[in-house]
Length: 414
Image 1 (cartoon, rainbow, N blue to C red):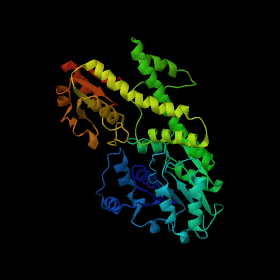
Image 2: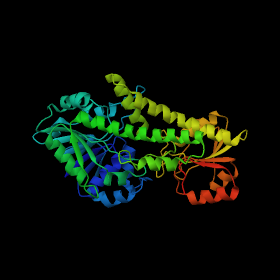
Image 3: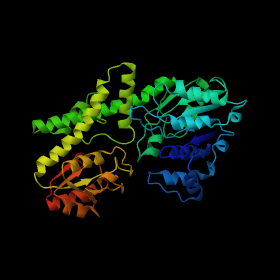
Image 4: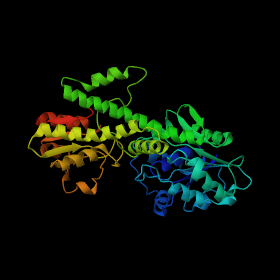
């Protein structure tokens, strides 16, 4: 099938490459001319696992476009995956999505069926509201037999984007009409490694499902972290023994039920805030999502207090893990960064190390030093905090054992 992907960021580019890898003719557009030039010339580099190989293997079916107009001339499905950043009120901004829709060429929608698929996360009510209104006004048609609108957000994590797209738990698909949903479902099904259920529903239902799923996960994480704090206060409690037992209940399950670090990253925090904002607007009690956010912040303080009680007056702390998870250098709402800032506020000086070469945010430069290697980190620190799983765990644990330095591994890795 001939498809267009608009927005070649951390999610859009892997999506375009996956479509092309299974034989779709893909017109891939991004507003950044520099990005398009690097992709066309072969100078583009990415640390996302599997992406570079995928781009190499799919290049015969990938047409990188400088101009939006040229990318949609003959396509049957247009996937829009552009940023929808959080606003101060917790809502997502639709500005980039609306800009794309407002610049589509109406002549490309004459006498043929075309479906617009919004992959970017948007607030419930957006697709049936401002997005539909903008699309219909621009194209000069109402949604129906020739113009379709779908909402199909991805449930992925940076560092495993390709794998998550190939092996999802489900495809979530909101649709304005059944024919539009069938086209998108067929395209999505072509890239998975095994059949997965496609949950098709109306647009608003799908919008609600997206943020509700992520909020349910963050509630589960915060619940486990609250138990972790309780276990430390009680003494003689192995939090893993507790959560493993709880997780054996089939109504609960073990996944994400682990007392460890606070949740973070580009999706979990903002989707949780968005659900709180939605409930507030609708007059629905938002106690659960709001408590989830409160618990997450309290867990940062809990970790800092643990360090303080362990160290006393000594002020040198080593911190392993700046990026929010293994496999990516992204630090957006990273637990490691949040912990670092809280330790700095407590008066500690930090030695940091990250196996993804994540960069420190500007506010930490005066109080944190990037260690040249793990040996230097351990040697120059009086206490080490391991904020996330790391690929160099064996080396790190060996050095910690040799040095007899106290440490806190939030994930209790072996």
